[in-house]
Image (cartoon, rainbow, N blue to C red; front, top):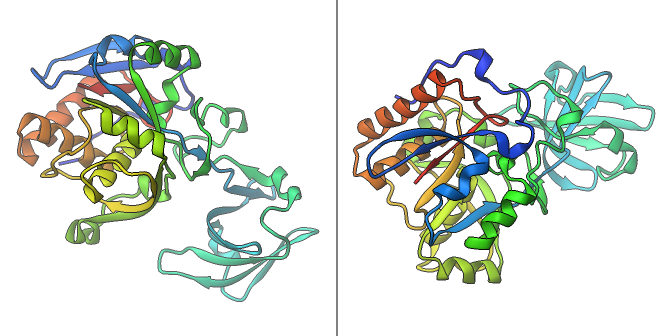
Amino acid sequence: MYDFELPKRLIAQKPAEPRDHARLLVYRLRDGSISNHYFYELSKFLPADTTVVVNNSRVENCRWLFENSKIEIFIVQKLDPFTVRALVRPGKKFKIGSSLQLTPWLQVHTTDIDSDGIRTLHLSVPHDDKRLIDYEHVPLPPYIHQDDRLENDYQTVYAVPTGSKAAPTAGLHFTPELLSKIKKYHDFAEVTLHVGLGTFAKLTDENMAEGRLHSEQYFIDSSTAEVLNAASHITAVGTTTIRTLESARTLNDTFRSGQFDTDIFIKPGYRFLATDALITNFHLPSTSLLMMIAAFIADKKGFVEKEAAEELMRIYNHAVNESYRFYSFGDAMIIV
């Protein structure tokens, strides 16, 4: 139901230049119509009374590459100054009890492997040792060739607090000039959700049975909470922003400031409490992100899941037929 065929040529390997020249598919909830535009035209499609909300998390340089990229350590979590949890490649070099000399000054000792294959590694130097900077990279998604020239392109122009393992990609299309234009006519708010690796994960039977997903941390400051509580209409930029807004409203009748964790799974049948319109990229098949978009369509149009999934696939088929570019560096759509 959430699967589709995508020609490889439509998987974007680099962003539009400039950013806001990405294409923009406009889907109107009132009549199901679809039209083709460009992201720099976004302000024409925002409701007059809407508050635009973005996720300002910054992507970490958490991909460590050694020996001409033959060895990779992808930092998932830092436990203490010398201990990290990480995905590794190749796994055979990181067996429990083994030690690996990666540089003359960096030795890595594997102390544990969990059920997901994540290693616990003890480092011979602290993970913030300045010598590691030469080996640290922004983690481009697996379907994009690692190219350090794209590292700035894989950050939003408003990214501030570092903590994400992947970019909140719907925000990559904004330029400072477009933001200034939008802020002249609309309230604007920034929340923070640090994106985890689970954002790319395919759904499991366990997810479906428990109705829960991977946990992520989010923050809302007091001034942002005030703006959100005063909003009469909210346009969320990206699925991570939706996850933040809906998690915050699920906890309380109003938005409250603070730091929280969420494992919310938004799927058809969910009633949206905070989001009235959304801007999003085109997502990988069979993921929770597709189910979230279907849930939004179902809730706003009164559809059952099958109808919403079919409508979403109609939108995606249009995008494929019109040669929209997909995934992280791809084009965008607004559902309004």
